[in-house]
Length: 177
Image (cartoon, rainbow, N blue to C red; front, side, top):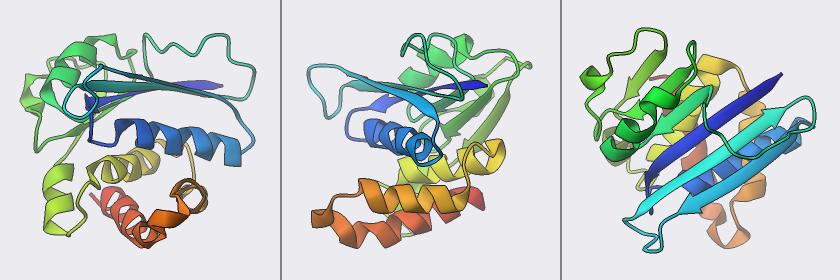
């Protein structure tokens, strides 16, 4: 079984970090994986997306052209990738920044979470990406909460260890949204 995931947004929203977390979750669960970041030359404020493949068998290509799962963190990313999602796929959007009513597809599930608003209200600056990951793991069962927490502890650098608790809160916010 292979799950192809595409994460997309503006540089600075944590798209690549969120993809890295998913890839490390796969590593923690002894899966085959690939993580392929892509961003514009301007980084912060420019476009950023990340392809993650998680599989029980070797992965032929790291490119995700028709994702099973899409996390879209802004309107341009939603507009660009929504039609590429496989029928039966799931889409997780930041409804603070994206108008979910624009999706006319009835062959996919769309989860609209006001993740930027939730992050701001809960003093989790920059936590929108992790809130969306929390919703993704709840709705897909791709990984357990325990795997996510172990991964956060591994991926957050020691110099930012004080952010681990905030990331745990963000995951739980997403799971409860």
